[in-house]
Length: 327
Image (cartoon, rainbow, N blue to C red; front, side, top):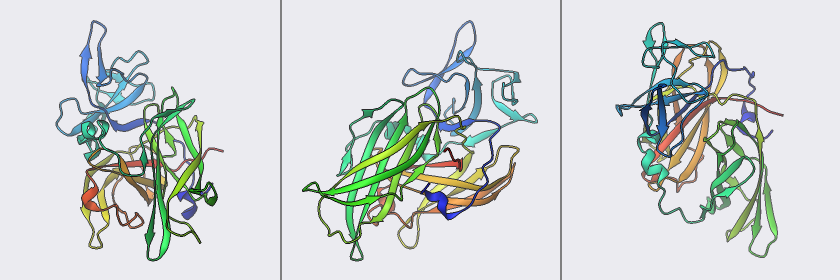
């Protein structure tokens, strides 16, 4: 499987708990049965954990909702974790929190998308278990080489987890002749839960022996149903800056909130413009991600196209997930 994994060998370890790291906008609701969380789009979490910033202080707590969508309080969850009287996840009496990322802070901006970048297709296309919500393809010249950038945004519209597999990007000239078939396509994260988004992408792929000009791309992607967990590790203290070479640089910390050591962790960075569209996706690895430890990370967008500048980035998202394989 030709993805970012080819750079490293990793042991695959099963996770003990799934806690989605997307922080949803919405509000608490109550009836005679109990409390639940209603998202702004009218949906609500059920049979799962959610990180929620209910009071808008920039700090999210993790809550478990039963299969009917009601909050569990003062108990042990089905997967063996303790929640207090408010329903917040605790460890030895301490409420576990995570800082809401800049992506979450700008949720309204990201969801209410405006004008798309030139070369983007924003038509929503629904398939059996997922939708393609955004597709971007650009051919550019760099140091005398013809290169391209491509991003495909996938939304899980099914009731179960999905696995993002291999992809091929076929590139044609305006006469309909195929000039390249690219298979070195990355996908992040490996597994997406219902409602989550993932990305197939290529940054600066070379079009060998192809002159600059107008081209079109026809992608073939593999999205499968999955029984793997869509685990996300808590990310905090993030900030974005411009490196001395003009690249986008994101730093922060990530915590292994499980009882399992990870020999290798993959961090994906998604950059959004002021209209909420993804303009760059890239990643980095962390080694020796031991259980219970918090470690720092730095993700430098060195391999992004030169036109993906710091000034174009309005918000961003950091996705910390284990490397997973499904055959």
